[in-house]
Amino acid sequence: MRLRHALNTLVLACAGLAMLGGATAARADGYPERPVKWIVPFPPGGAMDSIARTLGESMGKQLNTSFIVENRAGAGGNIGAASVARAKPDGYTILIVANGMAVNPALYADLNYDPIKDFAPISLLAVVPNVLVTNPARTGANSVQDVIAKAKAQPNHYTYASAGVGTSIHLAGELFLSMANVEMLHVPYKGSGPAIADLLGGQVDYMFDSITSAKPHIEAGKLRALGVTTRKRSAALPDVPTIAESGLPGYELMPWFAAFAPAGTPPEVVTKLNAAMRQALADPKVRATLDSIGAESIGGSPEELRDHLGRETAQWKTLVKERGIKIN
Image 1 (tube, helix red, strand yellow):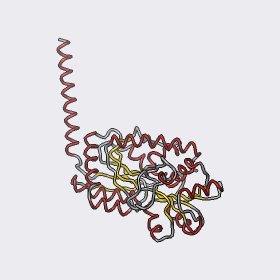
Image 2 (cartoon, helix red, strand yellow; image 1 turned 180 degrees about the vertical axis):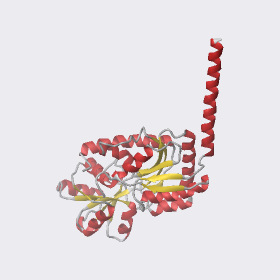
Image 3 (cartoon, helix red, strand yellow; image 1 turned 135 degrees about the vertical axis):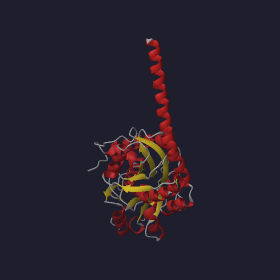
Image 4 (tube, helix red, strand yellow; image 1 turned 30 degrees about the horizontal axis):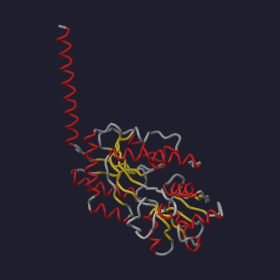
């Protein structure tokens, strides 16, 4: 009798699990049933915000819903990222974030989320290369090799501007100094705008700026482009060599944008979002938006994003420690 009761209990439990699994699958099949929130952890108007809005418009048409951008800026993107880490893992709150996701664990001692454990990767979206630029009237540098030679001849004489400590613009410079074994003085600003204004005005010597904001000044002849930071040349500046091919083999910094869901989001939902993102990245309107800001679409699987995040997190942890970079 006891054995029969135990068997009946086991059968009922298995049936319950099957029903639960079926319910989960049904929810995934019906997803999305209401609008999805894109959490962008920076103010409106930037490249990330533009990518999120254009991507959401294309995906909304595919999935017959709305993707609503909610900007939650602050603490280098940590406020927005933390809010998604704590969100319900149902696919209705998604983080659109930049490569600060991999950098911030090395910069912030009190980070209240784990980029690896607290998120389900969905897809890489795009990269926006940085470009090493100079005011030719101030430095006379014509190439990456010129920059290195001048810096070796006069250590800490030359300056390079950035949009702030820990930004990709700053880290591009620190990686350059480390690999070239030279030293320059870092001049951090509150944003790319005032930094490039002082570069144009001759107050600083160099800057690793995003192609988005540097390109108009390059085309006007006010700034000279010396090298792009990505592995391959950028379609936005095809005649500008990479820094790697200009004297620093292996140099690469790829500022990227990607999408993450909270950890525990059903795999079926992640798969559906990934497929829609890939299709959206092939949309001519999305591609036109990316082209307008100097970005290049990437795409890829959740597994590829997970591996990429792991590699980058380790890389920036090493560089931040080596260079003694600290958030004041």
